[in-house]
Amino acid sequence: MTAASRRYHITTFGCQMNKADSERMAGILETMGFEWAEQPDDADLILYNTCTIRDNAEQKVYSYLGRQAIRKQTQPDLTLIVAGCVAQQEGEQLLRRVPELDLVMGPQHANRLQDLLEDVFSGNQVVATEPLHIMEDITKPRRDSTVTAWVNVIYGCNERCTYCVVPNVRGVEQSRTPEAIRAEIEALAQQGFKEITLLGQNIDAYGRDLPGSTPEGRHQHTLTDLLYYIHDVPGIERIRFATSHPRYFTERLIRACAELPKVCEHFHIPFQSGDNELLKAMARGYTHEKYRRIIDTIRHYMPDASISADAIVGFPGETDAQFERTLKLVDELSFDLVNTAAYSPRPNTPAALWDNQVSEAVKTDRLQQLNRLVSTKATERSERYRGRIEEVLVEAQNTKDPTQVMGRTRSNRLTFFPGDIATMQGKLINVKITEVRAFSLTGVQPLAAPIALV
Image (tube, rainbow, N blue to C red; front, side, top):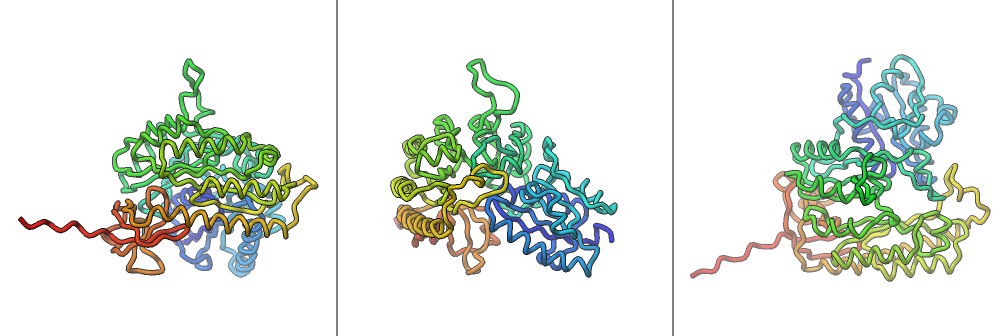
């Protein structure tokens, strides 16, 4: 069977980096002549781009794989691929567990998909998990949106948080050059994209591995410098970046965000815990006091900025008093959104081996308490939008109400309002907010002011 007559389906688990990797791999498959299939059962190449941050995401992959492995027994031409972090973590173990697999490939190998598949089509079962210098990305991704796009700026992570599997599966930090990043953004602008999100597991580390520094000892290439360098690309209306690490978040970066009109007033800065002893056990490299100073500084320069974060409950050894400090931090800092998770022991991480694990019942209880507080604070934060006029970049039709379109404010609040997607997609529309909810808004286009008769 030729590639031209073949169809592919990609299922993506996990973070924005995985979504960006999936778009690049889809671009490679389409360059090879594959066509997208909406349903996995209609495809004869299925790729699972996997996440290993938490155990439940990993287990879901195995259940999906099991179904397709059974299908392969009657359809031997079916090509099964596991990519991403589970692939990197498990390697050949995956082949032993699911012998029907054709290709197991870690995240660093996303750009090599065509070469790896050619090996598979020659009749080989392939495992690609060796460390690799990521070649500059010349593939054209198949973007899921026509309005907003991810742009990878740094791969990998050099941090060693004791709970996190990412450095083991995504490798060491590798920054792309500013010139390559700007060239990709210019191409996106020419294709009509209006918003870009710069991506990195630890984006504030951008540039540390690139050659060159100033006489004062400062790196020439930092995220702040990159924002100034790409800011004037014509056609791009909005710039975001994620994910930040409090250890490297500087006042210089905050000032740049306040100065540069295209950079959105939205920051995602995980804190993980409000207790210093736990932060030390996690090897996060900051205190809750430092984290609070960062948020205070952002609000000094941009009082209306939206701030989201990540938090973990039930980390090994977490006491009731330590958990209360996390609740206190969430209560006092009033986040717009906090992504919460109960601690999940991951393979080959130090914390997984500690003998002071917290019981599942306690984790569940703490997660529910934290989620209730997060929702309450988010609802309070949403109130500031009521009656205001917000600029919304229209992305898509509201799937639940075809008379409405949906998009995001500069502060990243999902917003719905009546409109026609055919004429509005990709446009910046002023919307008067009439309803507020914890994590989304509804509004209407304000009526033009009547012309006064002389």
